[in-house]
Length: 57
View: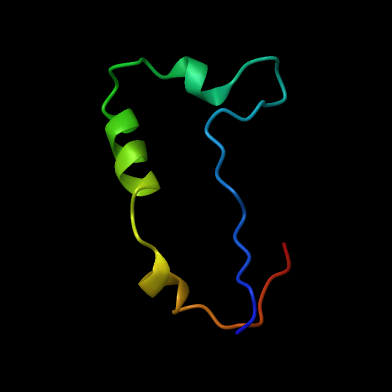
């Protein structure tokens, strides 16, 4: 089976301006819980939905 390629989601990536995206989100903001849950999901069954050929990285 060919390797699947997804564009990475990097919450602490730098942007056009000298700041990090996660610096604008409060430490106790509920979105951090959502982020933690998503980071811990098993995506194997989701990955099976994608064809082996598709968009290059």
